[in-house]
Structure formats: C-alpha cells, structure tokens
Image (tube, rainbow, N blue to C red; front, side, top):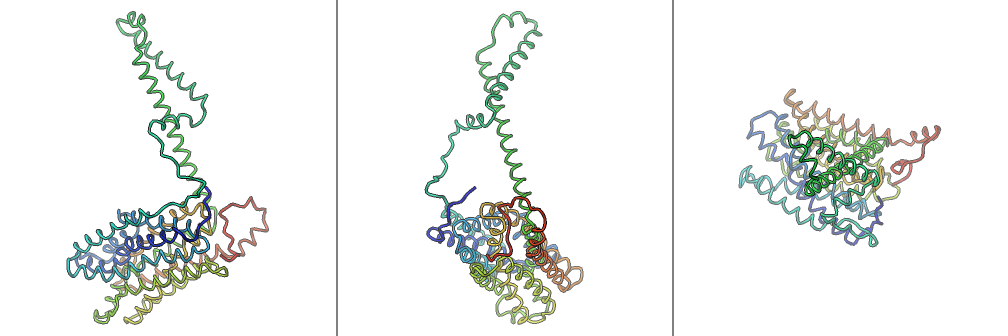
Length: 453
C-alpha cells in the first residue's frame, strides 16, 4: 500500500489540533487516576494491590474505556504520521502533550469535583466531558492523493456478483451445475420411495422449487467464497505479523515497551500514596505530585519531539537513553523521604515519560509508514498489558512488605532491562556481523541504526 506525499502542513495542522484535544479528553482522567486511587482505597477498604487493578485497567486493557483509549491513540498517531514527514517529530510532540496537559488539569479538576459532587458525581461529569471526542473525530480526514478518489460505496445488489466472480470462474460454474444436478437426482430418489412414486415421475419438478434450489446453490457458493476471502486475509495478516517479528529491532522494541509500562506507569498512579506512606504532610503538598508529572511530561514530549527532527539525532538511541535514565530514577524513589525530593523525581520521571512522543517516530523508522498501523497496534497491545500489570504488582509488593522500596527497585529493574535489550538489538556491531554472512534480499522494514534519523 502506497501513501501520497505528506503535505507537512495545510489540513495537517487541523489534524494536530483535534488530535491534541482528543488525547486531552481521552487520557486526562485515566492518567490522573492517582487522585481517585486514594478515594478508592478509603471507599473499598481493600489492599493496595487489589485496589490498584481499578486504575490500571482503566489505563491498560480489559475495560470499555481502555479499549476506546487504545483505538483513539493509535488513530491520532497514525494519521499524524501520514500528514507529516520532515516535521513529524514536532507534530507528534504537539499532539502527545494533550494527554500530559489533560493529566495536569484533570488532577486538580477531579479533586474539586470529588469535593463538591462526590466520587460518583465526579465520574459522571468526566464521562460527559469525554463525549466531546466525537466532535474532534469528525474533523479527521484520511490522507488521499488527488488522482486517487475515495472508493465508491458498493450497492447491496452487487455484493453477490462481486464475490461470485472472485476466482476460478470455470470451476465455479461446474460446481453450481453439479450441485444443482445432485439436488435433482436426490429429489428423484426421494420421490421414487413415496407410495405415489409413479405419479411423481410422470410430473416434472416444480419451476418454483427449481428456482429456489438454484438460489440456495448461489448463496452457498457466495458464503464459500466469502469464507475463502476472509481466510486469505487472515493468513495474510498472520504472515505480515510474522515478518514484523523477524526484524530484531521491532522484537526488542515490543519487549522494551512491555517492560517500560510494567515499571514506568505505577508512579503516575501511586505517587500520591507514596508521599502519604513517606509521612509527607498534606499541607506540604504545594502542588500535587501527579500534576508535576503531567506538566513535565508535556515539556518532555514537546522537547523530545523537536529533538527527533534534527538530522544528527538518532531517535532510537535517544529513546534508549530515556529508558535507562527512567530506570535509574525509579530506583531512587525509595531514597526520597521528603516532598522536595519526591517532587524532583516526579519531574524527572514526567520529562522522561515524554518519550511517548518519539515512540511512533521510532516505530515508523523501524517498519516503514505503510506498516505503521499494523505494528503500532501490536506495540500498543503490549503497552496496555504492561499498564494493567504494573500497578497491581507494585501494590502487592507493598501489601507483602508494607513498604514501596522493593516495589520500585523491581520497577526500575524492568525498565533498565528493556532499555538494555533494545540497545543491544540496535548496536551497529550486529550489522557488521551480518555482513560477514550471506544475506538474503533486504526487506522494506529493515532499520539501519547506523544512520542518523
């Protein structure tokens, strides 16, 4: 599938604006779920590990809200990458700040709504605000070249004819005739077994019944060809998925994003409870730690997105650097015992979490723009899985040890492991080793890590 040249502007800026507000409305509340987590702990009276499932599923997989968020995120990123090429990093940075600004605003908004309307009223109002995503989605137009108009709608009466001529025209005619003859012979045998079989043989078959049998044969053949077409599409999809995982950088990328979300997502959900467990007084919380993470994530997404557009910057190595530093910052959380140190670490983690703006950039350079939607959907599935598993695991560690220390050491180790796996897969020495061996024909999705992107 070939895409027309990216306009790098024009209607693309409208796409950027509506994608920004889509992520603002979609991800603002789920990312600020740490405010609600405190309320759920008091309301349900359950352990931290069990209660953390509520917030993690809202941002991961398993609930209707998370399904919608996943579809919206993939759609906004994919259409933005199609509209921008030379300014892709800037565009992705701008749209991805929508979720961070939403986190900053929703953290304070949800506290105020809980105070005035209670937990149930807060959730109803947040859901009503999310309905504005429909207006944003109506402005998104797929990129289409001038000489390639949109496909016409297929009339219902032409569907059968289109699928009937799918392939093997001569064989399909034979098949229809054989089935039709078999139907006649079967009816004759049945008539011969009746008491008045002589009368049945003397009378020809009813034309209406014959027409009905012919229609049944046509419908049977239509269903058969439709099933064959769907099966071929399924095999093609599986083949494309297998070809993606033959790319060692893509395979390392999916492992890294899974481990990153297992270890890197819990702070946004649990940092407020970490402060309370560290005996930080509420009057010392000048700015909610969740809000600090949100605003610094917006700054990180914008700056890292701008850096990705520089020709001398290798975005894959830049992404690896953010993973390694994030892992070190997570390991430092158990050493923080005051609001100031927790706020500094929250700012660092928020800035580095801004690597989400360059993640689609790295994915595009790894697999190509034509495979972006397919590859990004796979990666987002594993990211959502990591989002779902991370907070409950950290909560269970707390229930087990009554401290967050081991939990965040575990989180830091996960992120560091993912970063080093991706770094090893991206090292140029692998290409040097491969050049000494007979190489097959190069594939379109090969990622040349030695060049600056």
